[in-house]
Image (cartoon, rainbow, N blue to C red; front, side, top):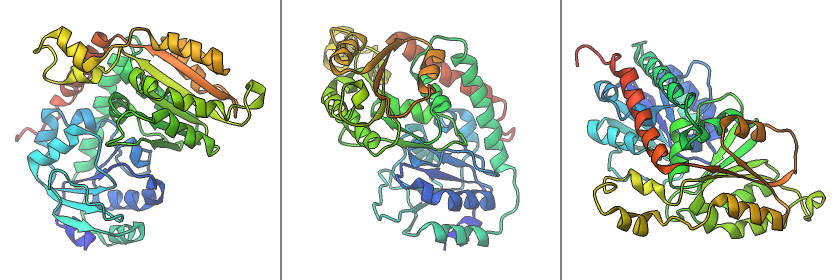
Length: 381
């Protein structure tokens, strides 16, 4: 059924949402993308944002799908595997164009808030691989146009991030560049998971990316990451300053598994990266920001803490025997994330983020991508 459905559509995309077992699907998804000539729009939590021979893996679809280029290249079909994607521009792009929509849903969750699904499939990787072998599609240049646009978007992003101080987008990009193979990344809700989706690039080295999306919000992020690290996997967790404060108790659990050489009783390799933007600044990306009274906005939504995360992390680390590093550049972050060692214990890395500069940079990154791909729009549109 899947091969017949896909064969009827030339301009399709494969969307990979959050999956804990994405590795199990990698070969089948790659085979399908190659056979269909469709690009793969995979968020990091799918475990499928990785380089795959012969597959166009878009790193920057969150920004690309905000542009007029994306609306000039509407899809005929979408094949989604995994949970609901993080990217709001992706969801809105699909809603605007209403392509034929197949959902591979082996767990029978049927997560489809937009009511876009037209074909629901409870199949496994073998069935997808079989469908790929049966596809009979001709090369149309569709995937190559996505590859070219994604490359232009990446160059535009680099032109901004490589010349400016380290802010949240640069932190997400650097983590993807620096974490060694075999490591895990745990990502907080709010802005971290969105920035990782937008700026972490496909890589050949394995990097398991986890997040607990949904009703849990920012609670328990450090505790969850500590659980991953306790399995023996070196783990980095990316959190904002409010998520850090919400789960300071998680550091106590980490303390109980700190190596004896560091004053603890167990073995753990956990790095906590805290981007301190003054509390809850994701809300400043909402349309209400700048419209309602600024003092009321900060009091009700931003909830700025009275003291910096660096001060808090310094005191906690001293009390618990953790390392603490307060840094301000991508080079410093790279050096810490790539430093050799195992069962090193717990490190807390704090990075001060100017909220106004961060918001402005996000806007300029979107504008830079839009400008970079504008010339690639089809002349007929």
